[in-house]
Image 1 (cartoon, rainbow, N blue to C red):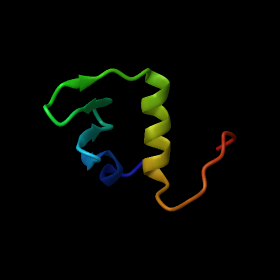
Image 2 (cartoon, one colour):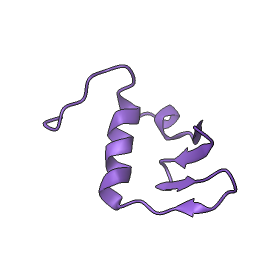
Image 3 (cartoon, rainbow, N blue to C red):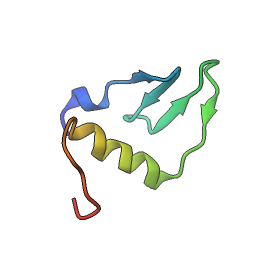
Length: 56
């Protein structure tokens, strides 16, 4: 995965940091996610504009 896919992004008032595996709300408070959810977000971020299936 290229490093641009791991750059923190703002989405609907939340900050998504895939490199650290964290999401913060508008106030900066951490939002807990399961490890699998972070992995899914990484896969989606690595394939912008493409259809992603469960099989890969």
